[in-house]
Length: 360
Image (cartoon, rainbow, N blue to C red; front, side):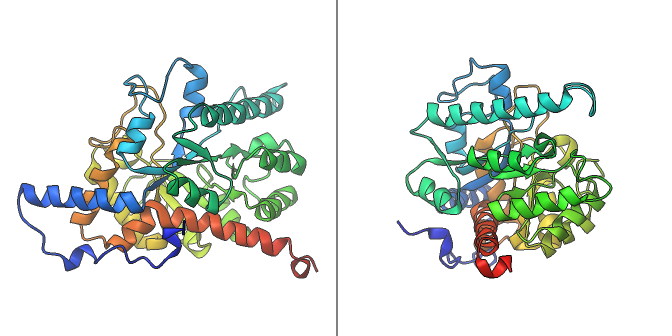
C-alpha cells in the first residue's frame, strides 16, 4: 500500500476556510474532524517511558485498560497513536565516575532493549518493531503501532563506537547525548566521531536534556536532522527542562523536530496551556519543526494537564488546535508527517555517507 504521508498534504481544506459553528456544536465538529484526521495521519509520539515502568511493575497487562499505569493499547488506539518511540533511558545509578557506574548504565540499557523487544513480541496484533520510515508506514497500513527503540543514553557508549554499532544492530534508532562526557561543555573529538557514526547508521540524535550551548553544537555538527523528544517552550515557562528559542531556531536550521511534552510542571496544568506551547514552537521552529512527545508511560501520581492525562486525550488536543485555526495540513505534519520526515531524512543522510563519493 502506498505511503499516504509521502503524498502531498491534501487532507482537506484549512480550518480557517470552514465556517465555525458556535456553542457545543463547534466542539463536536472539531472533535469529529480531529478523529477523521487522526485516522489518516495518526500520532507519532516521541517519548513513552513504559518500558522502564513495566520492568519495575511487570504485572501490568497493557492489552486491557489498566488504571494503574497511564499507557495501554486501548488508550493508545483511542488516542489515534500510530507510532511510538519507546524511551530506553534509565534513572542515574550512582555518580558518574563511581566504581561500576559505567557498567551499570550499559547493563541497564541492554536490559531496557531486551524489555522493549519483549514488549513488542508480546503484543504482535498491536505493536510492530520499526527500524525505518518504510516500517513506520507499513505498520500504520497494517493497523499496528510502529514501535521505535530509543533513545538510549549516550553514557552507555562508554567511549566505544562499537557499542553504538551494537545498539543499532539490536534495533536502536535514537541516541540521547545528554549527560555523556563527550557532549558537555564542548563536543570532544570522540563526540564528533559519535555524531558522524550516528549519521552513518541513521540513528537520530535526541537533544532532550542538553544544555543550550551543547544542543546548538550537536545540531550544527549533525548532517542529519536532530530531535528533542520531549520538552516545552522556555519562553512560556522557564522550567530547566524546557528549551529556549535559540535552541528552537538551531533545530529549525538543522531541519529537526521539537516534540512537546504533556507534563504540568513544564507546560502548565491544562490542555489549553499545552496548545500554547505548540503554538509557540510552531511559530519559532516552523510548521515542519513541531511534534508531540507526551512522555506517558508512568504509574500515578504524575501531574498531567487536564484533558491530557493519558494517550486517549490526543483527539481533544487536535480539536483545540483546529479551533485555533491550525490548517489540517499543518496538523498532519504535527501528528505524523514531521516524525516520518526526520526518520526518512536520517536514512537519506546515511545512504549518502555510505556512498563512495561521500567517503572521498
